[in-house]
Image 1: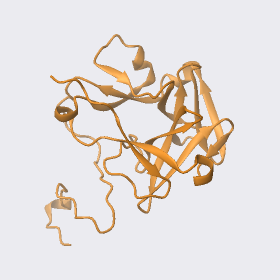
Image 2: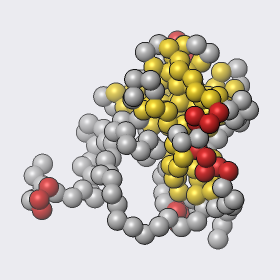
Image 3: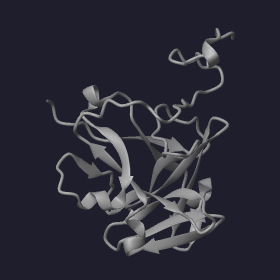
Image 4: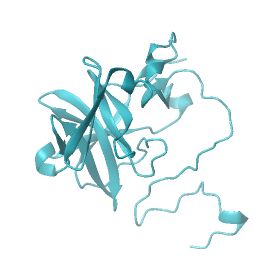
Length: 200
């Protein structure tokens, strides 16, 4: 089998049309893996589709950064166009402690010392932030502030892994939603409700 291909990050100006095939965070209807660089340091955060345009949130020091000015215009969004056969890997969300398993079949998605992590915040909402692998401190931004957890508290949070073995054949338990833009062709792989005919 050919070597697995690299992760694909779509460069997006804030407010620009949302990219195709973004990686959605499990259990979240409109939250996607995002990446931003500050002085060359990678920081993961979250992006969402706001009426077809890119919006985002990143934790930085003690502030949540969200605006074009604060983020200097551009971010990146993780995408997956293809499948295991064409790319040689698939994405799997697992508790972060899985990175210590004795396995060569998967590895953390990371850029430098940053890896995306789904954190349960003090308001009980789950939001995507990042774990600094050099300090084991995780940060997430919301409501213009930054929340941190560290050490053992991070290990049950979900992280995203590249898995190099074929995905299991099992019944899909999650509803699958596809983001589409106004005016695009109607998706061809939809299942009509109760088997009724779709009428456009």
